[in-house]
Image 1 (spheres, rainbow, N blue to C red):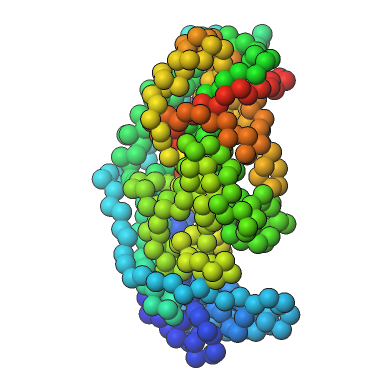
Image 2 (cartoon, rainbow, N blue to C red):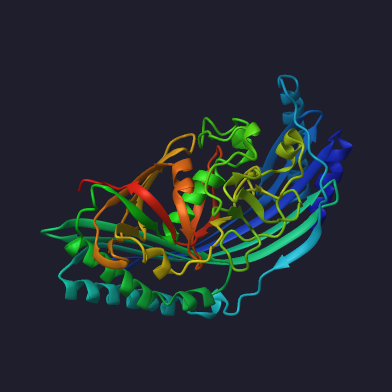
Length: 480
């Protein structure tokens, strides 16, 4: 993977006066199949590849990239990076430096059990047709229309090689398989309901077999149809609430992961992705109940956000963002680690070859507890179970947040009863984590793309967690 060009780039940068030099080759191959309302719309393959250079000269960083993979082009972007850093060093008020870190040498290569290309294109399209036929059949039996159905099946193959002047030499070869669907349900007396799901894993076609999309989406469609037709209003009074794994994972990502990005704590994301309620002095501050531990871990086998070494060659590890209700640590690259006088925890990521690596999450989730699902329900007299999510928003500081359930049910005397339509959980970050009094033992994950930076970088992540129980929460209702 152009190792000679990477080595030459690092050596050339050092010869021009760089204190630190980093060269990264990255190739992303994306194949997408899109079906709309049972009709194949798109089947396309795209390849994006190139080399990026990042240098530290004096107290400033410079970054440049090119898709021209030859020595002359690479040396040109090295010179551009050096010039950029020197120009910046004349105007910066506070310089940049990199923390000491144990950088690694290693190769990470995931071998799919079933290669994507071993399944014919027509077979993939027929598979999506089968999924579509089945959800239409289910909806027709219920008397519900599906005016819009968008199914997408994708392969995303990643090749990445990082070298730097501190001795890092790491390679990742990772295949990803992705499925998403956007489904709109309509009933003339009950209105519209919409559902979006995204699944993604670092595996081959075997991921599609594991997901069993025909049966799982039939069940999903039936459940949504029941909510649309039979859904009642949520209770007006304060009730106990069981929040489903899907919603818990999203909340952990938005109100623990993003606030815990060290560059955001330093104010660097304020103009793009927002601010954070966390201040440097808040490490060790109580934010939730003793049952709440939220972590971010890139090393989960098969995960959508999987990697073992970051873009600076630092080995990935579990990052404990909240431990037993206390804010524990931030996500760091080597630059922010130097400022906070800690070690980098391997959080430097870039979405493409032409994007600068920044502090990012990978797989953020709440650790499971000891309760079965039935045990979470058993002493609830009146409550709501918000299983899945259709809409959410959160303020710039990641403090005030709002989630609208799509599949939800009333709980009466410890039993799941009739569906509830459009329940709204509107709560602060501290209220959410502090209200948790029981945590389920079963954990699950959803895939997604985390957005951050300028220009925007959408990077693959997992959201995860168990079901949790909140005590005495007021549930609102979204007007349709």
